[in-house]
Amino acid sequence: MSLLENLQWRYATKKYDPTKKVAQEDVDKIAEAARMAPTSSGLQQFRVIVITNQELKNKIVPIAMDQQIVADCSHLLVFAAWDRYTEERINNIYNYTTDQRGLPRGRFKSYTDKLRALYLTQSAEENFVHTARQAYIGLGLSIAQAAELKVDSTPMEGFVGEELDELLDLKSKGLKSVLLLPLGYRDTENDWLVKMKKVRNPKDEFVINY
Image (cartoon, rainbow, N blue to C red; front, side, top):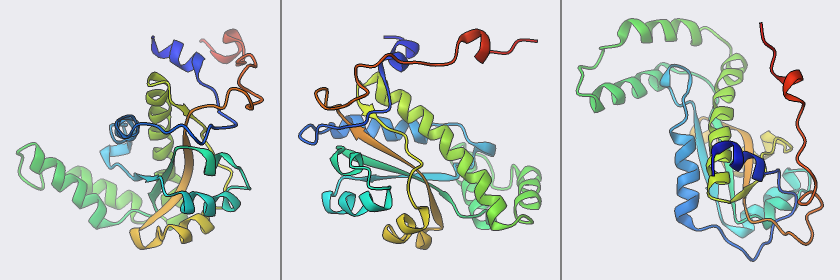
């Protein structure tokens, strides 16, 4: 199937079959799609946390507005972004990049100097607004990869970030939660949305040509 056919197949699953589990190989591919996502300046400002522990998923349900899909899904992905930019974070990714490419460290110093001048003078809040945007790019590619594998998913913003951060001890990792992505298989008998027509804005309204 083509990408567009896969996107037509998928929908934001409202009820999962808790007895059906996604193969680890497929979960790895979905997470890898996020890892391969393009990010601003190639900094990869977010991480993907994969949760399978049922007790932990149950604890997240009240944090996620009592949405039961968090507990019933096979795997719960948490997209968490850097809480702020630091000189060390910028240096680390560019040192790693030059090492992997066999280039001398400092090869991109003029560019990283510009990044430090831009981001290190901003507030933590301004930084997080930018890093969080990168997580959405990864989310989109993970959703597309899941659809190709015929794995259902539900992108979610409906949760209390501060409470989830505390539960997962994200502060110690310099991260803040941005998005949730339950993965699993739809309960075709009990999901109210599964048989409804997929609806999007008409193409002539959505695409604006000049």
